[in-house]
Length: 65
Image (cartoon, rainbow, N blue to C red; front, top):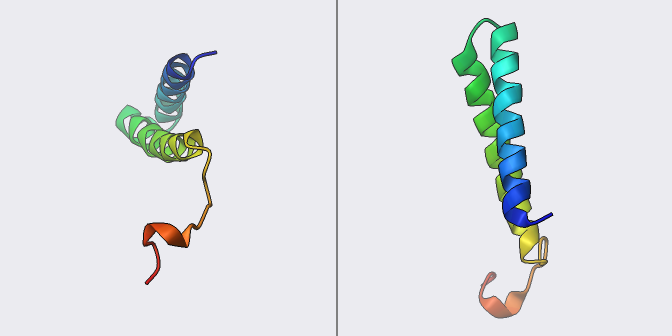
């Protein structure tokens, strides 16, 4: 599965899940907001793993003084 397809599937799935949760709470916008927050966290984590260097602390790049 390509990265673009995975991103689209997760985005659509979280949007649908957010709408369902919003309907349960009787506030669709709240569900969409929660889905957007969860999606943003997932997206940041997914893209950080993409470079295959998540958690690497390399002092040669000026990270530490």
